[in-house]
Image 1 (cartoon, chains in turn cyan, blue):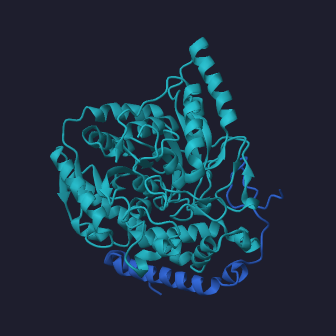
Image 2: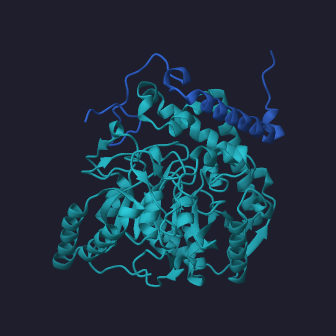
Image 3: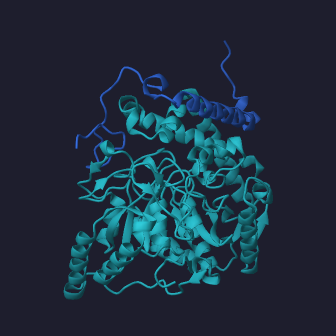
Length: 455
Length: 68
């Protein structure tokens, strides 16, 4: 394990783009994190930002940051591919608002990042763009669907990426590549210009090495940044200890032993830091994984129904059959599942209210990064067939439509393990506060793979 | 490149939509080799629905219904 303690940011945009271009040239042929690069345009934009800042005094709060954008999010002047077959590619004439806000603040987009087809899967091994490889072990994938965004950050090609998260697509890749990933509250960041998967659970959010950077990016992209920063300042001054809920039974099965060991060790570290860890019975949240998957297949099946009927051979079989399975269910089934999701929300509200807890904490992924070539269907449906799925834990905030933050929390077999902080809607800043408290006192997030620059 | 209609609603932020079709579903869309997999996955989803039903609160199951 190598440690990069600097997390430094170049002083100018031109230097930042130059560094990103150099690292991408050195690493991406093997890792395949990017579907499309726009280095020349990035240099032109960086020069303009530097000139505006140095000669005209314009303030760019994100000057010196380069960004990779998941290729289901619009960046003006580039194709949005969705990781899908060529007929689905669209030339974007406008930035998605999330991207536009970052660029207005001085961040420079250097490329679009690889993903699982239509953000509908957990391996980021694209039939159309190839597999993204995990920099910690290039024989393994980076989970998904935002695998390219995670690898671009983990390997040090860019300090920040944007991903999308429906059932864990930011948090899971973040966990298995050793970085920090944030699933925001629904509605905090607009989804215009972002390819939908399941609209009642879809989010777009930041991925970076540390919580402090994730917070900066979130506050720039957020609909109400002024309110967000005010709340953040207030919470920073808290004197009461953080209180978290955990459920030992929740991690008793369906999780790799090494992941569980790392997670439990991280919990004991949190307790040593003064975090109040309450072991409680969360068994009335059982069914969350089923509720997530049912919602996702039914909503995505509905969104894709006409295109799937007209052009079925333009989908990979893996994605097509999942959508078709969802289309075999009907509106009564959908209503039933949404009613159940509301029941889950009621249980969580009561858990948090009755205990005064700030967050529920779980592992992020039940597994370390999987070998390349893993069957994506067995990963998605493993919960029902073998008791294991990559979404065992990430599906909880997805089913609830709650925000969550994944942080590095240790290693298993030399590969990163993540923990997930889940809070109620609007608690993003409190989750950052807790995450920063953890990262101020630990070094898990500073570990980088051997291939990364500075390692 | 001939642009096909897309469900994804990006590009210029206006979904071009797809031509309305009289019907869609498994019979229209599946390809050779899909049927067995779709049936397996749909069976898993139906099992999941049953599990959710069992987990639902009694209060919700007993939601009052109008008398005939």
